[in-house]
Structure formats: structure tokens, C-alpha cells
Image (cartoon, rainbow over all chains, first blue to last red):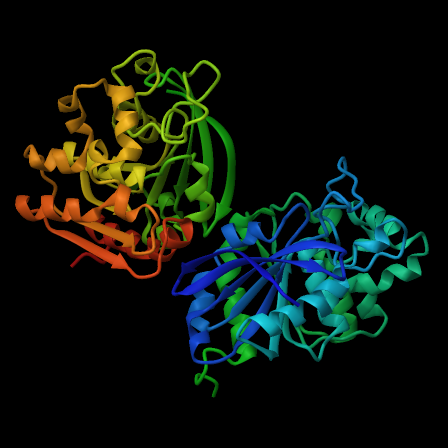
Length: 286
Length: 286
């Protein structure tokens, strides 16, 4: 359970750190980023998990996500994991940005040779929370989760499967039905095998269809997102939520694409939305 | 005077673009970033120039500087140039991060072979403003300038030499006396020759000593900045400003280093400070 500090820097009155550790779940060294807000000197702070999209590491949102100002205002710890196992011993497909390194899809692979390392679901839901609880001033009774694209998929599916752990869940341009989208179905087959029934636990729309529930979702989606029509299709989540009676606030944002220029624009809204549901800032809950 | 659009993305209601052009001043293709705020649909907006530090391109502050939210609120165009000429035909010293590519020092080199391309002063003060005026909804009668480290040096020296053009000037951790600091004096000798009298036009402390004046400066400096004692020495600027009667607000920030985690923390303050002096937001001037 020991972690190594890669770097720390003061920012917005708090500390933005990068840490690494030997991961049992992933069978390799893993790196993650944690922002600890200034309020942590007074006591444990709620934890907001941010899951990143295809090709990203922990660093992309740390550098470009612009979350520290509001996290420091509200008193939120923000944890940004990597998106897959990595390293020379980890099987990969270097020609495919939608599979392997940077494309773990937040699932536990069952197919060889990927099942030894590609266990991002267990990593995010079990190993990393234990590390965070042991090493940071974290109030693990107050957790929320959000993410972008593949990480939006991760946030939605993990929240649906663990509704008691997370007080809120939101997403930027999430992959809502990965088992039926070209850019993710191929990865699912390689990680999980050809039986599509086994894919349903890793697909937000399928989970909702199968009776999994969460209190509510906030989703922002750019209308100028090049992946909108073929890959993301948020209307599928809208339909699934409508049928299941799950409140979904889907905001279609005119002119915005899939980039961090989009994410950072709506980051403040998401942080405040989670903050309200996590009871921060402290003392402001009526 | 034509520019090529490399990319554009909507952000904070405005447009973050990247552009390139064949630079006459630098004898190579140059790339720069421009953020145009939403207010530009109503009419020309003031221009705030951000000059970056050693090793940076236009992209670092665009990705990590977190300037768009307040620039969009105030209605500021933010221009982020590159820090040097680049390309296969441009002489460089790949082993030295303090000279050549990424280290133009915002001066016009006089020594061969660097004098043909390393003309960042002319580029920033003449060629790029003409391009910006011709291609963007810019109110060139309202300009301000700021920057970080080597770019802070650029902002200070360019403001001192052009006090009528810029309404305000600020800096994050600027190099205030480059001709006397180890990490810059060697570059000055290679760009400008051994006669140190020729270096004074490119050194904020020397310029002030020689009678150049500017209305006031705002400087933020991290106390945990590893370059503070040997390279940056803001107290030299403080002493020069005191003697010259130039108001300097020097804020020594406990715990902060030299990174974008520091810059982004104080970016809002600097944008608002420039905004007040540029008369934005429109209508709020008392």
C-alpha cells in the first residue's frame, strides 16, 4: 500500500501531486494524480474521481482540465487515475488507439493475454480507493465520480454498479453504449470475448436496461463533437434513463467539440454540481 | 499578411485558435495562438499579449494557463506567440535549453548566424501586431502585455521600450536582469556579441537605469521557485523601480514554484488587473 511521490506543486492554495505505485490489480506500476485542497488541513475532504478518455494518462486533465480553482474553493480532493495499465510487460496493440495502452475502458478483461493486466474496474473501484484512503486526508464516506468520453463511460458504469458509494455522477461527452459502437465494440470483444451478454456490465445503457439504477446524471455534450453521431449518441442514454425513470440532465452545447477546450468550459458547473451533492463547502448546507 | 488556420475550438463561449504564417522577421514559418472572446461579435476587443518562457511554444499557456474563463468574462483577445524561430533552416543548439529553439529572449540577434532568424523583438512588436490587426477583431488602441519567466523579461522590456503602446504590463516570475544572470548572459553573448552595452536594451533593470519608464508593474513570484535566488532575483527589479519611482507591486507567493500550477493560480488576478487598465468589461469604467 505504499506510494511514491513523483511530484508535488502548490496550486490554488492546495497541492497538485503525482504519485506512482506497484499495482496489484494491473500487475504493473501505475501513476495517478491527486489534488488536495487547502481545506484538508482542517480535516478530511470529500473525494471526486475524474476518469479520462482514450489515449489519456493522469496528466491530460491535470494540465488542461482547469479543475483546481473550484476544487480549492469547495474543498474537494480530485483524483485522476491513468486510463490503462502500461509498461513493457503489458500486452498492447500499438497501432490501435482504441485498444490497449490508454484504452482500458474501466473493465476487467477476461481474455488472455489481457486478463492479467487490464483490470481497470478493480483498480478504480478497489485498489486505488484503498491507496487514497491510506495516503490522503480523504473522507471516503463522501465520494462522487465523473469523466470524459471513455472516462464518462467509466463514470456512468461504475456509478450504476456502485450507487451507494457515489453521491453523484456526471460526464462530458460520455460513451453511453460502448458495446454497440464501432470504436469500442472491437475492444470489448478482445477484452471480454465474443459473448455480448458479458459486455452488459460494462455498458451504461445495458446496465440501466438490466435494472441498475443511479439517483441522477448530469451530462454535457458538444454539438460540434466529431464523435457525436457515430460513437457517442447521448440520445441512447436519454432513452434508457427515460424508460428507467432516472433523472438525466443532458445539455447539448452548441459549437463545442470533444476537446479539453470543451471540458474546461463546463468544468466549473460539474464541480459545483458534485459539490452540492457532497455537502461542500462545509457549513453551507441548508 | 496571410495566415493559415491550424485549428479552432470553441471554449468559454469564444474561440481558441492556432494559426501559422510565413514570418518575414524570423525567416521561417511561425505558429501562434489567439483566443477571441464572445464579445468580439459586437465589436473590436482589447488585445492582451502573453509571452511564454524558456522551452515553451504557443501551446503551453494555451493548454495550461487557464486564461480563457476570465478573458471571456472581460472581453479580452489573448495572443500567445511562440518563443523563438523554429525549423530545419534555423540555426539552433539542441543541447542547450537556454539558447536557440524555445529561447529567443524577445530580442533581435545581431551575431551571425543567429541574426537572420532570431528577431523575436521585431516579430512581437511589429510583424505579429500587424497580422493580428489584419485578421482578428482587435482594438489595437488598447493593448497590454504580460508573460512568464523569459516571457516576463519580454513583457517588461517591451513595455519599457514601448510605453505608449501598452496600457499595462505584468509578469509571473520574470527574468528581470538577464544580462547579469548565468542562465541568460551566455545566450545574450551569442545573440548580441560580447559588448555588454549592447545588451542593455534587452534587460529590464538596465533599461530602467538608462531612463526608460513605464506607468507601473505587477509581478507575482513564487517563494519556492527553484530559479529564484540564482536566476530571477526580483529584488533587483524592486530596487531599480524604487530608484526610478516606478510603482511595482511585487507579490512573493509562499510555497509556489515556477510551473503552470503557479501561473494558473494567479492568472485571474493578472487578467483582472489588465482588464481594469484596458477599460473592460465595457461599460463598467467609472
